[in-house]
Length: 277
Image (cartoon, rainbow, N blue to C red; front, side):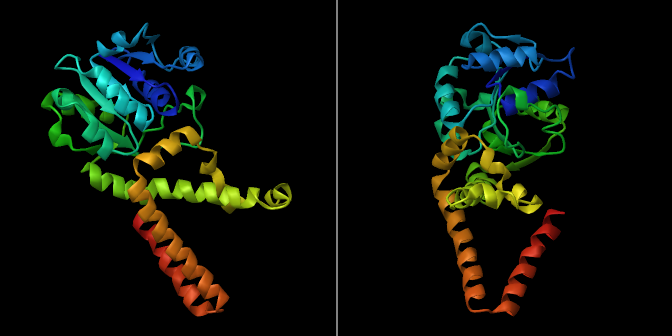
């Protein structure tokens, strides 16, 4: 089975590495507009070969789009003439706009998915073979995908050891805003609040594990996250508003020296990790 991966950064490169564990089952063909990404992907053996052009990718049995959301939407228009048996999988971080943008004549070819994994690093050199292992792979609107396409996509997800979860695109975007997109906004805000102080280097000299953990994802690609914030604007603003209310409550409790209620507020937050565990 020929797997064409469009986008050879962290997500695409890691997918290639994972699937290369099945050399008799998959041939991995890479495509990226960035020449260095192509060179690095070959050098790091993330793929088996590079596509000479976009048409070569379109002729693959499976096409995986591991590129930003805006680019995914544009690319759907270039895939309108794929073979009826072709499976197209996108890994976009917001799903509703992608789902609405897919041309109807190839909607059955598409399996819209979002792997809930990643790191703050990007590019082919950031690829990790086990990136998808035991991580949730959200599959949205699977009833709109063809029987063959669903079967192939689920088999690939099984091979990379991802845990599949099904939900609607709108539901996904609401949940992702709280669990992924808003935390990135908070991390950028934490980083900028320190950078705007008179002597940020002196402040960061005190940085321990807590600060480093909370600010780590502020190293994520601004290009990618600007795209995600734009695509999921409404849900993101709702989640930021909810976060701001909690910060204002915390500030008020401290200002009023209401330590007992502050303690209860913190204890309530502790309960989240009982759910996560």
